Image 1: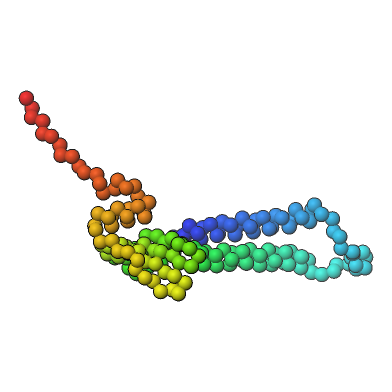
Image 2 (image 1 turned 180 degrees about the vertical axis):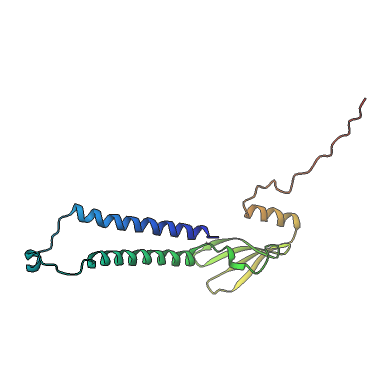
Length: 168
């Protein structure tokens, strides 16, 4: 199955190749040739192979499209989604809930590790340090739901027992 980012890159590549191919034809039709004809061209003699022009055009268009596609692949790998960062560990054991920059030199990350939450700080030296730890199960669930964008009411609903109405 093709990932969404790959489908987008393929669609952009096809669109650009169509635009480049059509743009070249339009450019030749709209603008006059500004090159000074050589003596051979003035005499009507063929100056080169019949495929030289189309091969150069197709080759340069292909080179441009491949360059753009390679750039898109590089950007996706460099700045793409970081979801698979801890793919070997299940989310029930370790889950990064969010990161915030405190200033230009330090950041804090909320990590769920088992049944506890850790607030881990990191400065420019690169050494992480645990700033806070939450072990209360209700507070862990509440904060986890908030970090994941779930409404605060999740987990609070209780089912009211039904009343048995005696037939009378």
